Structures are given as C-alpha cells and as structure tokens.
Image (cartoon, rainbow, N blue to C red; front, top):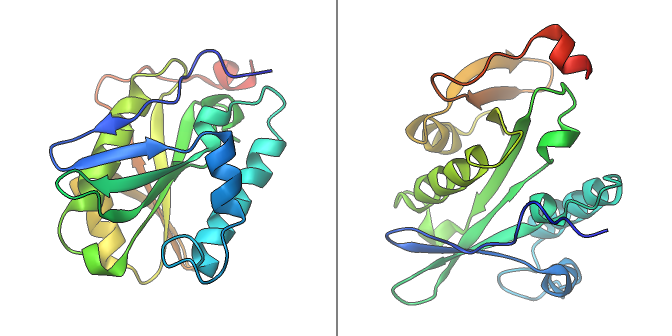
Length: 186
C-alpha cells in the first residue's frame, strides 16, 4: 500500500534543493559501490540500511517518511549531504507524534550553514504534516557542530545519556497541542 497522505516533495531553500529519493533511486543508493565518492561510504550505507529496515517494519508503507533526501547546492548542483526522518509520526515509540531527524554533511561543506538551512526546511515541512507534534534528534558526543546546527534550527537540548554518550534535542513549536497520557495510548 502506498503512502497517500505524504507526498515525496522536493524542498527549495534560498541556497539548497532537498530531493527525496524515490524507491528506485533509494535502492540504487543503498547498493552504491564502495568506491562511489558520495554514496559509497560506510556511514552513508549504514544510514540507508537503517532507513530500509525501519521502513520494512512499518506495515502501512509510509515511504515518504523513511526515504533519504539528498541535499544539493542550487547554484551549481554540488552534493552537500543527506537528511532523513527516522520514523513516521505514527511509528513514534512514545506515541506522541515526534519525528526523529538525522543528517550528514560532506566534509567540504561543513561550517557554511547549509545543514542548518536544510534542517530548518525539513522541520517546517514535517511540522505542517498531520499527526506531527514535534521533532527529536540524537547527537553522539562529542559533536559540537551538530549540536550547533540543532540549536540554530530551533531545537532545545532536553536530555543526555552518559551511558550512550548521546544528547537528545527536541523541537516542539510554541502553542503545540499538549498530549495527554490517554492520547498516548490511543
């Protein structure tokens, strides 16, 4: 069954194009050769495998939530990095409509504000979708650059796990509806 409620849309910002992979492109990138300069890295492959695994367990096939999105610079088409949601609002483990976001920036484009621009665009898009209450992100310690991206994108540090060396960030818009315990159960 196809996801009819959430379309695959390309997002445009001042400097970026954020392009979702369709199923064919997703499979091609998932199986990119290891010598591919953009998509062959072990980190990229692991992220794609995790997205594919999570999508496989979502019985309603919400592909638009689980696909990776490639980030390109509008001025010259340079590949900047990738960004993805790691769950759909319906598959939030806490059942409150939080969508996890993850991202990676190519080394040559770090520190230029591109990822902040992409995270902001993705957050705004997600928050406009039904059933999305807010966003969550986890950052492995130490990663001050990623912490800064989230801070500049309107996320607030909410928790830290010393055992996992992980900082948790959330973005919940002011005035967002409150979720009661009963709503979490149903």
